[in-house]
Each structure stands twice: as C-alpha cells, then as structure tokens.
Length: 140
Image (cartoon, rainbow, N blue to C red; front, top):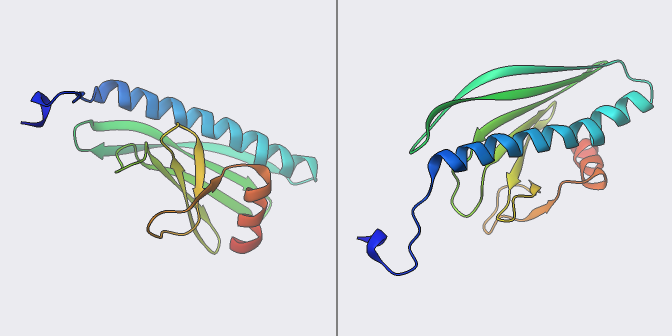
C-alpha cells in the first residue's frame, strides 16, 4: 500500500478544506482591490453580493463556500468556487464573464493564477491588475 512507502504523507482533508476556504477569502479581497475599487474609481455604480453554494468533493464531503458577484452598471462578473481537489494544483474558481469563463487556479505555492485557456500543460499567468485588464478586453 502507498501509505506504507517511505516519505508518503497522508492528506489531512479537513486542513486542506480550511486552507481552500481561506484562499477564497484572499482571492475575493484581491477582487475588491483589483476590480471593485477600480470600477468605483472610474465612476461605475458597483454592488457586491455573496451567494452561498454547496460543493461536494471526494474525501472532503460537502461544504459551503460563497460565489462572489460584482455588478458594475451593465457588467456582471461572477466568481464561482469549483473545487479544492485538483491534480497538481490546490483549487479552482471559475470567473463568469459576458463572453466566456476564465479559470482561476490556486497553484502549488497557494497563489491565485489565471489559466490561459485549458491546455496541457496548463499555462498559468499571474493574477494581477495588468492580466485582469487583458482578460476584460478579451471577454467583455
């Protein structure tokens, strides 16, 4: 059995779930800084909503997370937590935009990144203001 191999470490699923939920909070605070504050600064009427969502995953079972919805005049951006269990990564949130969905990936260093489409291997770019602007230009 694998767990008897030297160096094998059992996953603490409760700890993984808590880290995932905390990383979502970190992402949403960056959304406030990079998106909400910028929309407000240029004069948009901005409203932010949280919407409870139930996620069921292997090993972790069901848990509650929150979708984060940003409404700025006619624009709507919705962040939807998908999973904290991914091969090679620590989680995924989908960002729903008018012209498509953008995948946000929590990388091995627990930093949020943007998946530049789904390719193999997955190309990840930094979740920062410059790259968010590029995404908006393409998906709005």
